[in-house]
Length: 482
Ligand code: GAP
Image (tube, rainbow, N blue to C red; front, side):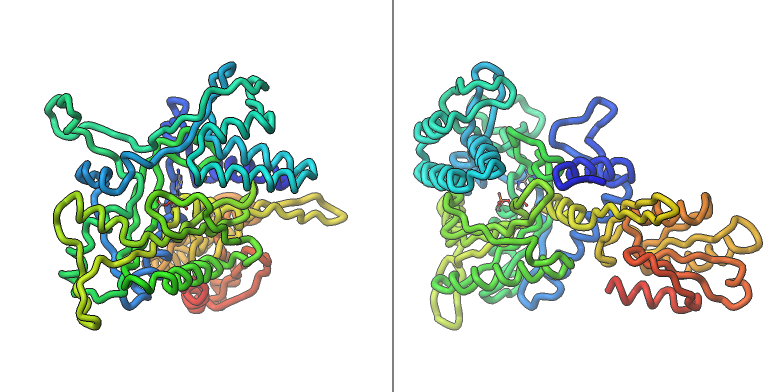
């Protein structure tokens, strides 16, 4: 049985063994902090993406979705502030040459203090760090590391360089001509999807005749050259974001910020995750664009960590784009008869982090031992709507016409939801494999099926089995996944 501390490792191994997530280009020993989704991971990820998309567009009166390109005009990133400000303070250990993100180094030490019972000291350390961060006091951060004698995990020494800023954007060359000296072929891989929304604000507002307040949503890849990239799909260099920018009348941003905090938390709870596993964390050190910001944190096996950010961005982005592009970014409000640049509330959630959260919540190791027999199972208790496979169709034997019945059930159901057909191996083994993939329903076709058109349905979480008519199968599954 995995303890909380090694549950994270157990999930990583499980993901690899059962076709959820593989290290990228693994035959070449992988690429740090880049991962590929396998056959079941990509289904899970797609289901989460679609669930978010539907709840943030289709089920809203005033939010539409777009799909902007990853490459954007380089000036976008000058205007957005990412060229000048999208930095992480880093520090190197001179003996091991290992580089650390300053906040990770300090937070790691605070965790250690807490584990040793020094909660007050840990809290003081974090408060001091946050104060120095918000003042951009890098010398102070170094002093703090030295004061607490925080050492490198590799060399064990406190021989640190100064704290330096490191820009997280990936750059590449555009077109076939050699790069000019002033670097005007340089383009960036977008570090957030949000800017694709901002630069299309007027296109969407005008063509969609959108009236404020309204939102634009987008799902897509983002890229960050994370220095300390570890913790599986929690911190990746290529990842997917699901973002929504909500444009509001200036002066109303406070109430919309609260509205979206609450609405997004409700969405999280609708995943069947109990509220004790979530908490809000208000930012002290605000990103360069933010006027107020908080994170929704989930309690991963590695502790409470950010899954989603909710940011009150003011008119920072649209004003910057207006200034740099010299194109008006104003909206005419027919109710107030005024032109203004709208304010923005952003909800920004990482798709991969949500996959990690759903996996962490679903992964259970159950001891099923009886006095007669030792037994256990690993089961992924996904909400049925997110499960990669909804229904497994399992003929008890490979003969006597049972596979034919199974195939006909498969034909009836496969256009409605993802089914999986399997006739190999003992039934108990097949059930366990489906538990490990998180399949909420298995049906078994046996000899009685031929007599009375009934099958056994087995429920993943309770392992309860009951006899149902073949013509009830589709309805039962659809009721659970709708
Ligand atoms: N547009 C605002 C923005 O990008 P952020 O807090 O930097 O804000 C939003 O990122 C979300 O994107 C995070 O809450 C996280 O879920 C996800 N995210 C950010 N960096 C990530 C990374 N390196 N790997 C995986 N997910 C990441």
